[in-house]
Length: 337
Image 1 (cartoon, rainbow, N blue to C red):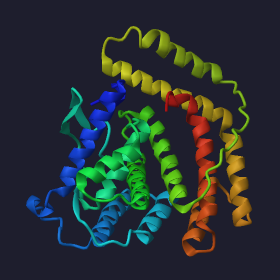
Image 2: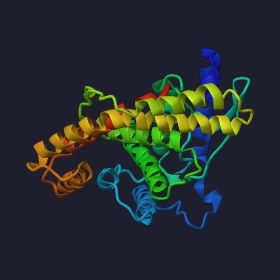
Image 3: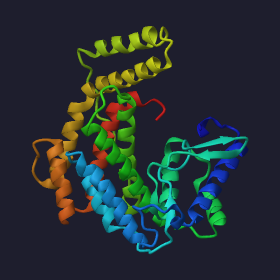
Image 4: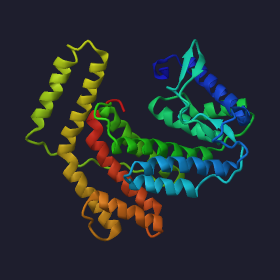
Protein backbone atom coordinates (compact mmCIF):
# COMPACT_ATOMS: atom_id res chain seq x y z
CA UNK A 1 0.00 0.00 0.00
CA UNK A 2 2.95 2.38 0.45
CA UNK A 3 2.89 4.56 -2.65
CA UNK A 4 5.61 6.73 -1.09
CA UNK A 5 8.05 3.80 -1.35
CA UNK A 6 7.63 3.68 -5.12
CA UNK A 7 10.48 5.79 -6.52
CA UNK A 8 10.46 5.06 -10.26
CA UNK A 9 8.54 7.99 -11.75
CA UNK A 10 7.10 5.97 -14.65
CA UNK A 11 5.78 3.40 -12.17
CA UNK A 12 4.37 6.16 -9.95
CA UNK A 13 2.49 7.76 -12.84
CA UNK A 14 1.27 4.36 -14.04
CA UNK A 15 -0.16 3.43 -10.63
CA UNK A 16 -1.61 6.88 -9.95
CA UNK A 17 -3.28 7.03 -13.37
CA UNK A 18 -4.70 3.54 -12.94
CA UNK A 19 -6.15 4.46 -9.56
CA UNK A 20 -7.77 7.58 -11.00
CA UNK A 21 -9.26 5.47 -13.82
CA UNK A 22 -10.76 3.07 -11.26
CA UNK A 23 -12.12 6.00 -9.24
CA UNK A 24 -13.82 7.34 -12.37
CA UNK A 25 -15.30 3.88 -13.05
CA UNK A 26 -16.69 3.71 -9.51
CA UNK A 27 -18.29 7.12 -9.93
CA UNK A 28 -20.03 5.88 -13.10
CA UNK A 29 -21.69 2.98 -11.27
CA UNK A 30 -25.46 3.51 -10.93
CA UNK A 31 -25.92 4.19 -7.16
CA UNK A 32 -29.37 2.55 -7.33
CA UNK A 33 -27.56 -0.80 -7.65
CA UNK A 34 -26.35 -0.54 -4.04
CA UNK A 35 -29.87 -0.64 -2.63
CA UNK A 36 -28.79 1.12 0.55
CA UNK A 37 -31.76 1.87 2.84
CA UNK A 38 -30.16 4.97 4.36
CA UNK A 39 -29.16 6.63 1.09
CA UNK A 40 -31.31 8.26 -1.60
CA UNK A 41 -29.80 8.19 -5.12
CA UNK A 42 -32.75 10.23 -6.44
CA UNK A 43 -32.16 13.13 -4.06
CA UNK A 44 -30.86 16.50 -5.18
CA UNK A 45 -27.08 16.60 -4.77
CA UNK A 46 -27.34 19.69 -2.56
CA UNK A 47 -29.65 17.78 -0.22
CA UNK A 48 -27.17 14.90 0.00
CA UNK A 49 -24.29 17.24 0.83
CA UNK A 50 -26.32 18.85 3.61
CA UNK A 51 -27.16 15.37 4.95
CA UNK A 52 -23.45 14.52 4.98
CA UNK A 53 -22.72 17.72 6.91
CA UNK A 54 -25.55 16.85 9.34
CA UNK A 55 -24.03 13.42 9.93
CA UNK A 56 -20.65 14.93 10.81
CA UNK A 57 -22.17 17.61 12.98
CA UNK A 58 -23.86 14.84 14.96
CA UNK A 59 -20.48 13.15 15.48
CA UNK A 60 -19.17 16.49 16.75
CA UNK A 61 -22.14 17.26 19.03
CA UNK A 62 -22.15 13.74 20.46
CA UNK A 63 -18.66 14.35 21.84
CA UNK A 64 -20.21 16.69 24.40
CA UNK A 65 -17.46 19.31 24.04
CA UNK A 66 -17.06 22.24 21.68
CA UNK A 67 -14.33 23.59 19.43
CA UNK A 68 -14.69 27.07 17.89
CA UNK A 69 -12.71 25.98 14.82
CA UNK A 70 -15.29 23.28 14.10
CA UNK A 71 -18.18 25.68 14.76
CA UNK A 72 -16.64 28.05 12.21
CA UNK A 73 -16.14 25.23 9.71
CA UNK A 74 -19.65 23.83 9.99
CA UNK A 75 -21.14 27.26 9.41
CA UNK A 76 -18.94 27.83 6.36
CA UNK A 77 -19.54 24.49 4.64
CA UNK A 78 -23.30 24.85 5.11
CA UNK A 79 -23.37 28.32 3.58
CA UNK A 80 -21.18 27.39 0.60
CA UNK A 81 -22.58 24.05 -0.62
CA UNK A 82 -22.03 24.08 -4.42
CA UNK A 83 -25.24 25.10 -6.18
CA UNK A 84 -25.52 22.07 -8.47
CA UNK A 85 -28.11 19.27 -8.43
CA UNK A 86 -25.96 16.42 -9.74
CA UNK A 87 -24.60 14.05 -10.74
CA UNK A 88 -24.99 11.81 -7.70
CA UNK A 89 -22.23 9.21 -7.41
CA UNK A 90 -20.86 6.62 -5.02
CA UNK A 91 -18.20 8.54 -3.08
CA UNK A 92 -15.53 6.46 -1.34
CA UNK A 93 -14.37 9.14 1.11
CA UNK A 94 -10.76 9.22 2.38
CA UNK A 95 -9.64 7.99 -1.02
CA UNK A 96 -6.15 8.30 -2.46
CA UNK A 97 -2.57 7.16 -1.81
CA UNK A 98 -2.30 4.82 1.16
CA UNK A 99 -5.81 3.45 0.70
CA UNK A 100 -5.21 1.18 -2.27
CA UNK A 101 -2.90 -1.73 -3.09
CA UNK A 102 -0.71 -1.88 -6.19
CA UNK A 103 1.67 -4.22 -7.96
CA UNK A 104 3.60 -4.05 -11.25
CA UNK A 105 2.34 -0.59 -12.12
CA UNK A 106 -1.36 -1.36 -11.60
CA UNK A 107 -3.84 -1.00 -8.75
CA UNK A 108 -4.95 -4.40 -7.40
CA UNK A 109 -7.46 -3.29 -4.76
CA UNK A 110 -9.06 -0.15 -3.34
CA UNK A 111 -9.37 -0.11 0.45
CA UNK A 112 -11.15 1.73 3.24
CA UNK A 113 -14.71 2.66 2.34
CA UNK A 114 -15.90 3.36 5.88
CA UNK A 115 -16.62 7.00 4.97
CA UNK A 116 -18.49 6.01 1.81
CA UNK A 117 -21.72 7.81 0.91
CA UNK A 118 -23.66 9.15 -2.05
CA UNK A 119 -22.57 12.60 -3.15
CA UNK A 120 -20.44 14.65 -5.53
CA UNK A 121 -17.53 12.99 -7.39
CA UNK A 122 -15.51 16.14 -6.65
CA UNK A 123 -15.66 15.10 -2.98
CA UNK A 124 -13.38 12.14 -3.76
CA UNK A 125 -11.03 14.24 -5.89
CA UNK A 126 -10.67 16.56 -2.91
CA UNK A 127 -9.83 13.59 -0.68
CA UNK A 128 -7.09 12.60 -3.15
CA UNK A 129 -5.59 16.08 -2.80
CA UNK A 130 -5.81 15.89 1.01
CA UNK A 131 -4.09 12.50 1.21
CA UNK A 132 -1.47 13.69 -1.29
CA UNK A 133 -0.25 16.23 1.29
CA UNK A 134 1.12 13.37 3.40
CA UNK A 135 1.96 11.07 0.50
CA UNK A 136 2.72 13.05 -2.70
CA UNK A 137 0.74 11.61 -5.61
CA UNK A 138 2.48 12.79 -8.82
CA UNK A 139 1.11 15.90 -10.55
CA UNK A 140 -2.45 16.35 -9.26
CA UNK A 141 -3.64 18.53 -12.15
CA UNK A 142 -2.44 15.86 -14.61
CA UNK A 143 -4.27 13.21 -12.60
CA UNK A 144 -7.42 15.33 -12.65
CA UNK A 145 -7.04 15.48 -16.44
CA UNK A 146 -6.80 11.66 -16.42
CA UNK A 147 -10.03 11.58 -14.42
CA UNK A 148 -11.83 13.90 -16.83
CA UNK A 149 -10.86 11.71 -19.78
CA UNK A 150 -11.85 8.48 -18.02
CA UNK A 151 -15.14 9.90 -16.73
CA UNK A 152 -16.00 11.76 -19.92
CA UNK A 153 -16.65 14.93 -17.96
CA UNK A 154 -15.03 18.19 -16.91
CA UNK A 155 -13.46 19.05 -13.55
CA UNK A 156 -14.55 22.06 -11.51
CA UNK A 157 -11.52 23.06 -9.43
CA UNK A 158 -13.61 25.41 -7.29
CA UNK A 159 -15.79 22.46 -6.24
CA UNK A 160 -12.66 20.50 -5.38
CA UNK A 161 -11.56 23.44 -3.20
CA UNK A 162 -14.92 23.41 -1.40
CA UNK A 163 -14.76 19.68 -0.74
CA UNK A 164 -11.16 19.95 0.41
CA UNK A 165 -12.41 22.22 3.20
CA UNK A 166 -15.16 19.70 3.99
CA UNK A 167 -12.71 16.78 3.97
CA UNK A 168 -10.33 18.53 6.36
CA UNK A 169 -13.28 19.49 8.59
CA UNK A 170 -14.24 15.82 8.85
CA UNK A 171 -10.69 14.94 9.92
CA UNK A 172 -10.68 17.75 12.50
CA UNK A 173 -14.00 16.44 13.88
CA UNK A 174 -12.55 12.94 14.19
CA UNK A 175 -9.54 14.40 16.03
CA UNK A 176 -11.85 16.34 18.33
CA UNK A 177 -13.74 13.18 19.22
CA UNK A 178 -10.47 11.44 20.06
CA UNK A 179 -9.47 14.29 22.36
CA UNK A 180 -12.87 14.18 24.04
CA UNK A 181 -12.49 10.44 24.67
CA UNK A 182 -8.72 9.88 24.76
CA UNK A 183 -7.32 6.38 24.47
CA UNK A 184 -4.41 6.45 26.88
CA UNK A 185 -3.00 3.26 25.34
CA UNK A 186 -3.42 4.51 21.77
CA UNK A 187 -0.88 6.11 19.45
CA UNK A 188 -0.94 9.42 21.31
CA UNK A 189 2.30 10.82 19.90
CA UNK A 190 1.30 10.47 16.25
CA UNK A 191 -2.18 11.70 17.17
CA UNK A 192 -0.74 14.99 18.40
CA UNK A 193 1.17 15.50 15.18
CA UNK A 194 -1.59 14.57 12.75
CA UNK A 195 -4.23 16.39 14.76
CA UNK A 196 -2.33 19.67 14.48
CA UNK A 197 -1.39 19.02 10.85
CA UNK A 198 -5.03 18.78 9.82
CA UNK A 199 -6.14 21.80 11.84
CA UNK A 200 -3.50 23.73 9.91
CA UNK A 201 -4.55 22.18 6.59
CA UNK A 202 -8.21 22.97 7.29
CA UNK A 203 -7.40 26.63 7.87
CA UNK A 204 -5.14 26.75 4.81
CA UNK A 205 -7.87 25.16 2.66
CA UNK A 206 -10.37 27.70 3.98
CA UNK A 207 -7.91 30.54 3.34
CA UNK A 208 -7.35 29.25 -0.20
CA UNK A 209 -11.03 29.15 -1.13
CA UNK A 210 -11.67 32.55 0.49
CA UNK A 211 -8.63 34.20 -1.08
CA UNK A 212 -6.97 34.91 2.28
CA UNK A 213 -3.19 35.22 2.11
CA UNK A 214 -1.35 32.81 4.39
CA UNK A 215 1.72 34.55 5.82
CA UNK A 216 4.61 33.03 7.69
CA UNK A 217 4.65 33.67 11.44
CA UNK A 218 8.03 34.18 13.09
CA UNK A 219 8.77 31.78 15.97
CA UNK A 220 8.77 33.13 19.50
CA UNK A 221 12.00 33.04 21.53
CA UNK A 222 12.61 29.76 23.32
CA UNK A 223 13.29 29.93 27.05
CA UNK A 224 15.28 26.94 28.40
CA UNK A 225 13.89 25.38 31.54
CA UNK A 226 15.56 23.91 34.59
CA UNK A 227 13.96 20.52 33.93
CA UNK A 228 14.96 20.24 30.27
CA UNK A 229 17.69 17.76 31.21
CA UNK A 230 15.05 15.34 32.48
CA UNK A 231 13.32 15.33 29.09
CA UNK A 232 16.71 14.86 27.46
CA UNK A 233 17.51 11.94 29.76
CA UNK A 234 14.21 10.22 28.99
CA UNK A 235 14.67 10.73 25.25
CA UNK A 236 18.23 9.40 25.26
CA UNK A 237 17.22 6.32 27.25
CA UNK A 238 14.44 5.61 24.77
CA UNK A 239 16.83 6.12 21.83
CA UNK A 240 19.92 4.36 23.14
CA UNK A 241 18.55 1.72 25.51
CA UNK A 242 14.86 0.89 25.11
CA UNK A 243 14.51 0.90 21.30
CA UNK A 244 17.83 -0.89 20.49
CA UNK A 245 17.13 -3.63 23.05
CA UNK A 246 13.49 -4.17 22.07
CA UNK A 247 12.60 -6.98 19.68
CA UNK A 248 8.85 -6.39 19.57
CA UNK A 249 8.01 -4.01 16.64
CA UNK A 250 4.95 -2.78 18.52
CA UNK A 251 7.05 -1.81 21.55
CA UNK A 252 9.51 -0.01 19.28
CA UNK A 253 6.68 1.86 17.57
CA UNK A 254 5.11 2.97 20.85
CA UNK A 255 8.52 3.94 22.26
CA UNK A 256 8.95 6.30 19.34
CA UNK A 257 5.46 7.63 20.03
CA UNK A 258 6.45 8.31 23.64
CA UNK A 259 9.52 10.13 22.36
CA UNK A 260 7.23 12.39 20.31
CA UNK A 261 5.23 13.24 23.43
CA UNK A 262 8.38 14.05 25.40
CA UNK A 263 9.80 16.21 22.60
CA UNK A 264 6.54 18.13 22.47
CA UNK A 265 6.38 18.62 26.25
CA UNK A 266 10.01 19.79 26.35
CA UNK A 267 9.51 22.37 23.60
CA UNK A 268 6.09 23.46 24.88
CA UNK A 269 7.59 24.22 28.30
CA UNK A 270 10.06 26.55 26.56
CA UNK A 271 7.73 28.47 24.23
CA UNK A 272 4.15 28.20 25.53
CA UNK A 273 4.24 31.31 27.72
CA UNK A 274 5.46 33.52 24.87
CA UNK A 275 3.02 31.95 22.40
CA UNK A 276 0.14 32.55 24.81
CA UNK A 277 1.02 36.24 25.18
CA UNK A 278 1.24 36.62 21.39
CA UNK A 279 -2.13 34.94 20.92
CA UNK A 280 -3.72 37.12 23.62
CA UNK A 281 -2.28 40.23 21.93
CA UNK A 282 -3.82 39.16 18.61
CA UNK A 283 -7.20 38.51 20.20
CA UNK A 284 -7.11 41.80 22.09
CA UNK A 285 -6.44 43.73 18.88
CA UNK A 286 -9.65 42.34 17.34
CA UNK A 287 -11.93 42.04 20.38
CA UNK A 288 -10.81 45.38 21.88
CA UNK A 289 -10.42 43.80 25.30
CA UNK A 290 -7.93 41.28 26.67
CA UNK A 291 -9.61 37.91 27.20
CA UNK A 292 -8.97 35.86 30.31
CA UNK A 293 -7.52 33.04 28.23
CA UNK A 294 -6.77 32.20 24.60
CA UNK A 295 -9.53 29.59 24.53
CA UNK A 296 -12.15 32.02 25.90
CA UNK A 297 -11.05 34.73 23.51
CA UNK A 298 -11.16 32.37 20.54
CA UNK A 299 -14.72 31.31 21.39
CA UNK A 300 -15.74 34.98 21.52
CA UNK A 301 -13.93 35.76 18.27
CA UNK A 302 -15.65 32.97 16.34
CA UNK A 303 -19.02 33.89 17.85
CA UNK A 304 -18.64 37.44 16.57
CA UNK A 305 -17.68 36.12 13.16
CA UNK A 306 -20.79 33.93 13.02
CA UNK A 307 -22.84 36.97 14.04
CA UNK A 308 -21.29 38.92 11.17
CA UNK A 309 -19.43 41.53 13.22
CA UNK A 310 -15.88 40.25 12.56
CA UNK A 311 -14.75 39.35 9.00
CA UNK A 312 -13.88 35.72 8.28
CA UNK A 313 -10.52 36.85 6.87
CA UNK A 314 -9.60 38.35 10.24
CA UNK A 315 -10.61 35.21 12.15
CA UNK A 316 -8.68 32.92 9.80
CA UNK A 317 -5.59 35.09 10.25
CA UNK A 318 -5.81 34.93 14.05
CA UNK A 319 -6.38 31.17 14.04
CA UNK A 320 -3.48 30.59 11.66
CA UNK A 321 -1.21 32.48 14.09
CA UNK A 322 -2.43 30.22 16.89
CA UNK A 323 -1.68 27.14 14.81
CA UNK A 324 1.79 28.55 14.06
CA UNK A 325 2.48 28.69 17.80
CA UNK A 326 1.21 25.16 18.31
CA UNK A 327 3.38 24.06 15.39
CA UNK A 328 6.47 25.59 16.96
CA UNK A 329 5.85 23.58 20.12
CA UNK A 330 5.28 20.37 18.17
CA UNK A 331 7.97 20.81 15.51
CA UNK A 332 10.68 18.76 17.29
CA UNK A 333 8.18 15.86 17.52
CA UNK A 334 7.08 16.05 13.90
CA UNK A 335 10.08 14.59 12.15
CA UNK A 336 9.69 14.68 8.37
CA UNK A 337 6.15 16.09 8.61
